[in-house]
Image 1: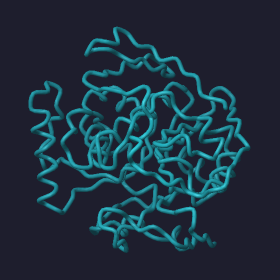
Image 2: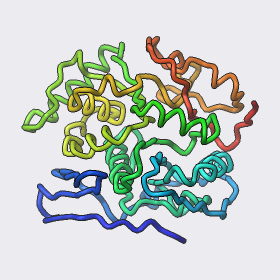
Image 3: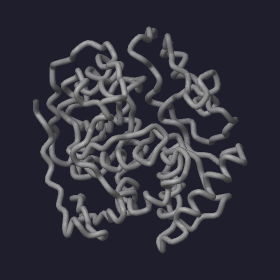
Image 4: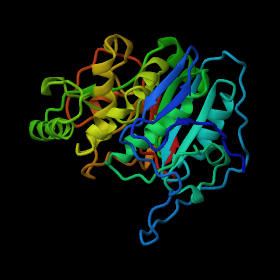
Length: 338
């Protein structure tokens, strides 16, 4: 099995002020790891927690990602339990773009992955993750740090195991690179009580942090976790990862960390971000509480023409009309129609 070999430069690693440096196109990016603990060896849940692997077919044909130096690439970062549910679709999509993309994966159960293109690209630093926990931010940060080491990666797309592309690679690539922006869909939560509690948890946790995000409650945003970052914003996140622990007590911190850090630390973020979902997800028709709808059948033309922002739990206005390029909650058993 081929594995990605990456050298991470760590100085004084036992110190609270240890640094990781990431090679950028123009400079070395220092990344502060203060107070962030990574488990380098454990990548499985405890033995007593049962897990049933999904019955997807094996895809043993690898994908050789190879591009000309200087070609702008999209880094597809998969934060998954194990295999991708729509492996065939992804294999074709990524194969078509092998000269303009890279793949990075962070699985919870790597031993169950049946797709070579995913297994071959597991990042070296995998940590145990928990739904709605701070570990999701740390895992995403690890994916970003690995992807930033390739200076030709200009865009960074976060995806789950039930995500799938809606268009072919060329259309998706052209749309993303032409805009040259991030896509983080965010809004002010109308659930006042929950919003206030999450904000107060952030402020209370970081009350002794000299570098706390200085934001008021009316500047506190909720976001869609599944996002696209351009390189400028990915580097900004890398330089502010020391703020991660400030979100430790916030419920579902992955819904708040990236948007609030970028909105606070990048003055031009609003002009450089597309505030619309890049990934379609259906919350309105879900009866599963804190989980969106799992599709039994997907009619692609209907999903493509839908207004993605209207499928969240509250009515959200957005001036952007860019098409969503992916969708999520498509299990392996779903039927897919044009």
